[in-house]
Length: 399
Image (cartoon, rainbow, N blue to C red; front, side, top):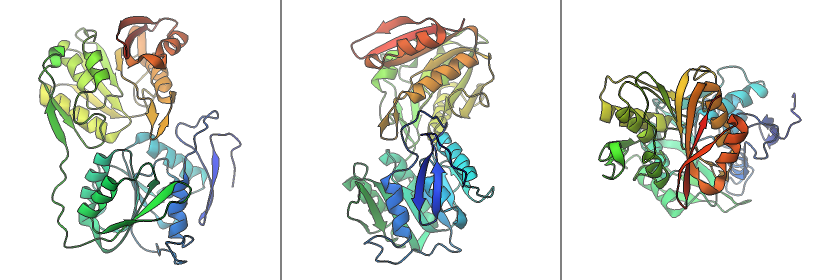
């Protein structure tokens, strides 16, 4: 195996081999691994190497194996010989999986990668679930997969102990069948669920819709549509509320990007305030992009022009260099359970590349994150538009 020597690639040893795995995009300075103790625990159980497995390996031969929520492709890469179907909500996760599969020398097409918006397999014999941060996303995906599960389906969830709660177990129990947990090992835990064919969980309650409050300007009272897993699916978050009070007005013909669009409230408000502007909604989450499109259509109609892209920030394959007039951005500062500014930096860098000379980047962020320092370093300028004790709105111009 051709090993990489950078910290970005770390060896992951399993019963199916040792693999060099990276997150995406790979960064030699990255200290976070592309796998954790929950991935290890789940694979050891499948190999019959845990107390709960009692020395009996799970037979995967000729069975339809579905991996839900595989964060960076660790499980999919390890099980590639069994041609798993991966279902996930992350563009970055799929890109990482493809790179990790290629690095492992896996034949193209050995794994089938689906988004959470794609139709799942009609039959699932082994369902492996990496418990997501969003309980709503887990609920929605279990509902989508329930018709494909049968009495003989092996259902195993995995997560760190901080990710598995009573409410997590109750979802498995309510939607699929009786559920129990393993002992904790290295702060990871497994979930075992026995499918009950007599159970009728009903339809998924997602998507949710709500009306925006009446004091936020042009978007007041407008409808927001949220698919499961979208940030702040039940209410307008306070950072976006602050941003809406200070948005610039786009001119007719301007190409405006709502970067990290979430449910699309910011881009929709920009479209309402600037008739004739060309809106582009970008997020790495499939659920978010679907939410943004539903929100935009609910407020501007089915024929209003806009683009909806699932992509890595403003990477070259998503948006051409020098093609954008205005970027609106509320960057996240978490990746799963980790706090990091890597996503914000990638967004700012991509925005600078995508903006025309004279194009503007408007950012809202927590005051303590110090985004103004990054923007001055990258753009050579940055101005404070507005601030309160918690948030700032910043403005930078592409020279």
